[in-house]
Image 1 (tube, helix red, strand yellow):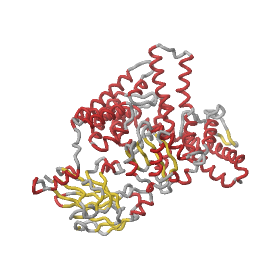
Image 2 (image 1 turned 30 degrees about the horizontal axis):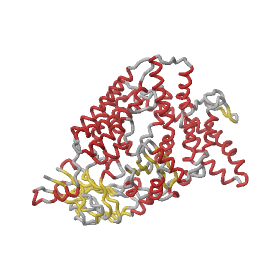
Image 3 (image 1 turned 120 degrees about the vertical axis):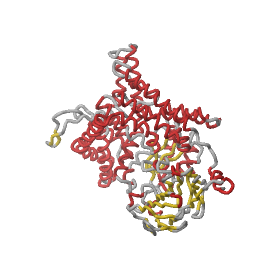
Image 4 (image 1 turned 30 degrees about the vertical axis):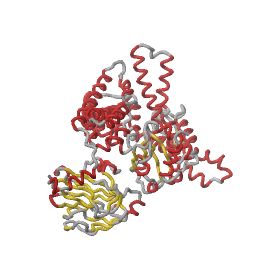
Length: 618
């Protein structure tokens, strides 16, 4: 095994085989569902040779590997011993995860494995369009029809692909799930009018090209499987269990989950069609093209794929999202080219050049995690370039006729009998690329200086005559840079510059003399205004607003004057962690723009007496 040692290290550092509920992969990352994330040594995993970064959020625990992730995954699954016996995932899922997050988790992880045939079908459709328009092969020829059958079949039999992909994740047998999908796609059921079951009239439903009905049906099958296995004697399991599962699940699918999923899917299509009609595709495309890197950082890039599949199935094209993905990816490549042209550092040139090519080809994770998170300014460049390209594409009505993105996916924009849609998409991509390149070049590459030296330099008020205000740590623990916090709103510095601390103590202290100006009702966040008008937000944990004040005991009230080092709140971090929330404490200067600079320290370990930031006033 080529990656045996690497995978052994990963398995050990994520808490062992027994801590893995499920694992899938996308183009560059392994996506784990772990039973207990606290067992994973994230920092150690980040330091492994071959790991680009680690993203841990409400979607999944994701280890960014690179474009060879498929080879790593194949060996990893074998080493984990994941088989059909690992099918009771649903039973062991974290009970604290709310319904919406659980649904998004399942949809994303189920879509990831089947992207491969979907992308294949999309690129094949683009190739066939070129061949037919050039006259090399007639659309009426047997050769064309044979290859076109592959394109059509992938989408027609999408329920079967989804059944296979989601079964283990939902605790069902993949083979029974596929049998169910094949049954509802049969000529006796699919799109047939006037059917009855137990004298109950069934609505006419076309199950082909859909994914929601079978996803709901397989979810139900998982629960039925668990129940049937409990009541059927062990000696009869092999014979009775599959039969009972199908006898229960098939009627439930036709009577309940099929119609429910069908109309839910139709509702999604209607919603997005109305959004395009009354708000405008230009707005949707501009927004999505500019913000996609943030979506990728959250590990949510695949959430839109089911919507795209439904739109193409219904309309024959996707009016927004696939085009926006390509425009955004090209903008990422443009931003990296701008950095490549601007930097004089040979090592940086090599890095920027490498990730430029991968982003243009549609794989942006190396750029996002290798460059964007570190330098941050490329996010602005992509928002400018991607936004301009998306705006142009929306205003000119660009459509994607199949699921394919990146430069190789451009033929997917050839319309029936004409090339105008393709040229408009090419123009959108050029605008995006050039806009992001210019923006990145102008914004420049932040100097790669040692932050501690900057702190020391700027703290020397007497020698350099720089007026600074130091902030001490609000809690003892491990200091991390804000860009490494598992929350995009904080990591992107959208709320201001600051730092994060992984606490090892339960008491939060004031980092400066000042006044308590804000205490959130849920007690998880406190605002302090210090000297020179410094506005400080202490945000305790990520998404802890959902705890409604549980695990927090306040020692201060709004309007209180506090001194540096004074206790503000007692926090049960163990309870927060057990409830499934990230305990990182963020300290943010919310009015960062009013000061010359905010310089964080890079000390790894801090106590409440240690310096964490310097606010440079002048």
